Figure 1 (cartoon, helix red, strand yellow):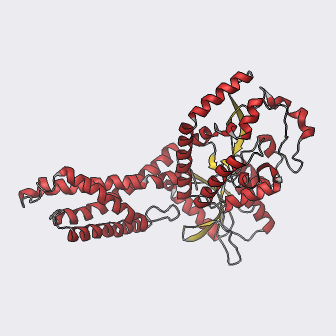
Figure 2 (figure 1 turned 90 degrees about the horizontal axis):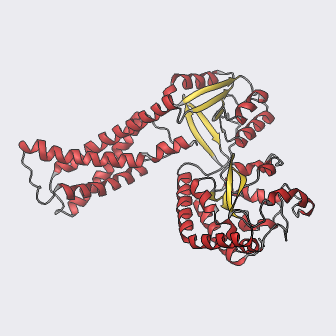
Figure 3 (figure 1 turned 120 degrees about the horizontal axis):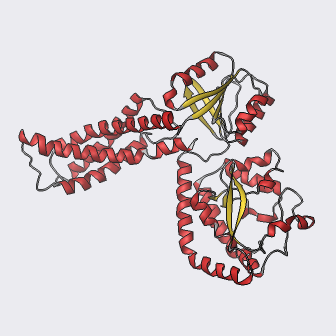
Length: 461
């Protein structure tokens, strides 16, 4: 799922809330300013506009909850205009029924039937109008600025393929662009498109191709973060993580590497930002003391900026400097002392490059505190696979690259399950398990285990 899909779903609740407030205000002034000439207002003293506005805001929250139950904020479902209006109508009716029940039980609230019925009618109309505006903005963003466009490639040579192509080309305002149509799985032709990020989504419209080519195609899509979808036949099997979509009346199944998506990504990012902001504020005195200790002992910067890979992007990981200045330049001379013979990683106990202050920082893992800034800026997540070096990734086998499916993390399932004592393949297996079985509850368990490990484990020394 692209970030643009998440963005346009996340803005729907606040847009709906604003439109509900607007509907409530319009109902109030229609009754008090226009209709009052035909029928005088009887509630102007016990329900002034200020009190009515707060009531409208509170009632709007009930409406939002009703819309959520009706499925209006689902990131998976694709709704037509008529279905969306029907769900808005059902959600508004449910919300207004709650208001009617409250009015019935608490008669002193107000006694205007028009405010109730008018609010129900205008809520449905205004919210649907707001949804149309969001959809219009989305289409405008796609057509004029390229934001949210899904560049697609289709493989197949049957009627289903032709139908998919016609659906994409005839509905260009929906943000879909057909970049490539291949009659067969030509990996030589497709691989550059996938590796150069020329497409966002690949559809296998005809699944009757050799299994080895399809498997290689799926691997290429996952390695390059391209969504892979296919039209299934009766012999297809599904993986643990998948999404089902419909295009042109045909079922499309997207195989996904991870369970992390949709509102889960939003919740995870919110947790990251909250934890990072809290961590930076809480440990600010430690930052100052550590900076002083580092500068006192040795020349060089307080922080080191290490090139790392998170998902498919290179970034600079911040750490407190725990080694002598330009320590990476001496790494080739220490290659013979590398204790990690099972993979591309480098690990050496009693590394001579580590300073005295650095030993203390590593012992209590204080050197990793600046990563809160990387979390806040979105380079990494709080929980995820370990950020790996570009030169390490060049040595990865195909199965090892599965750890690049999501953002790297400051801590993770592998780190709290053995850290540097694990074999590299075991570390990858644990990270892949986390990727395929992600949940917020699993994240919380890892956070608790990380705190316990920081207090009790000194294996980083």
